[in-house]
Image 1: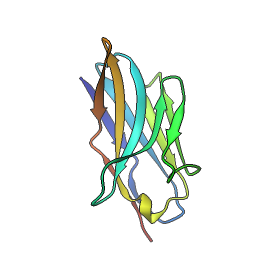
Image 2: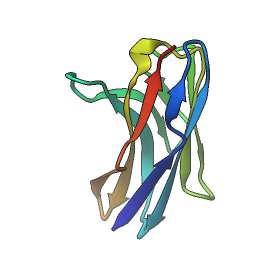
Image 3: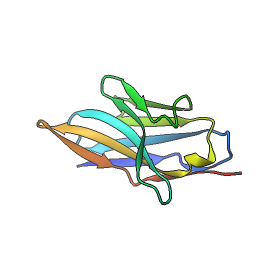
Image 4: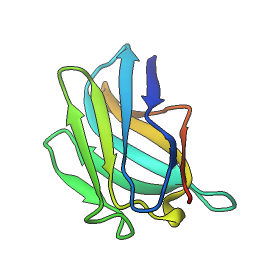
Length: 119
């Protein structure tokens, strides 16, 4: 089993920045994707950004140009640099890892970290 531990959430004023980190540990086979999802109160969980093993990234339209996802393969970590934060970015942010195990994909989730953007 893989464990994911997130850190870096908190309260920030509009226009500010935060950096989220997620560390994967435990039994890891072959990570094919790492991502950050978010869920605002009363809304469904949505993809914010994803990075694949080859380095390709995809962002939600709402965060393009403001958020940057990166990974450190040697440390099995993924990061989300969030700049120019807006109140609508307020949500619980979840780390996600897709691990290929003998031809199938296992999905792992972190416990979530709260990001609140407010003055």
